[in-house]
Image (cartoon, rainbow, N blue to C red; front, side, top):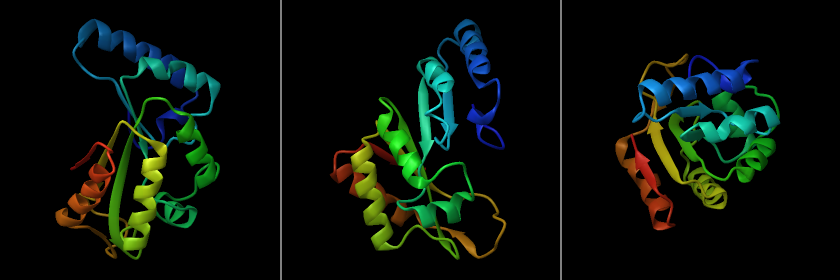
Length: 166
């Protein structure tokens, strides 16, 4: 489940999840039902009730601190601390992280070190690391090279965290 926005904000999110689960089970039993979310609404009890129907819960975590998070993701409900508290309550989840450089950046050695430490605290099942692939609103935001993504992945692997680069 994805789209141009946060899927968990839809007022009928639980009903939609139930219907998608039925369709997947009936017509595509080998398919995985995946949710990509910014995670900030996962403390909503109605949303929590339907999470077991989703095969793969993927939460975006592009930063290790409030300032960087807001620069990358813009204004969201709640704070970065709220998001981390919510993620810590999850039992089974993956993290997805986009790394970029330029006027907005999350790839300084200090930031990467803090991010790796935070990921280790959160204990996801898997981490998916990638960079931007399409044009951005500013030509001053750039993708990072594959070697840096692999370096970040290797730091996670060294700490026992399952991680992949895309």
